Image 1 (cartoon, one colour):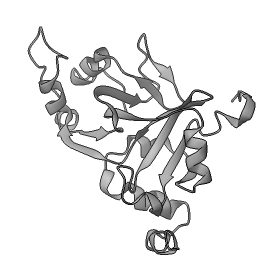
Image 2: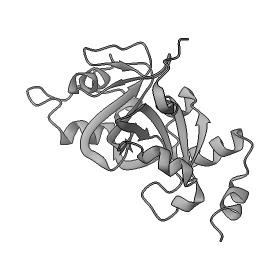
Image 3: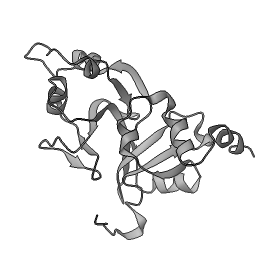
Length: 199
């Protein structure tokens, strides 16, 4: 695997998980895991991978113009009931799909060897028709940072950085993901909350 060397340490969080520290408890990002897709001198962007929007893929397809000129296909139950994630507070009406390497559309961007990003209605149509990627996580919205903003948040101890696990990106059990990731990193979630955030 080749590594790009970029000046000033930018790119260092690309393809990593950011795990919200207890100090973020009162924000949108409380107990979130963010998969960072891009990080450079212009800023960073990624997706919360453990926050459900309270809607299914079927709801999303029905509420958008994915099939404006055709009737809805008969989706497999597992696809129709897949939860749609809340990727972040930016562009909340736009759909993004993190997916496995077995799908590649015109605008697909590789993030790592096992996670790709596509944000076209075409990929949503393919998923609905059962012809999409084998594994995917569908989100509305994304999380973004301006130049130097993420670096400053790291200095403020807002985030813990962990190596990303593609299995966790695609895992649909959003409720337990945060605790499972902390435990896998050797951190007891209860201690993590109790030990931090007290002056």
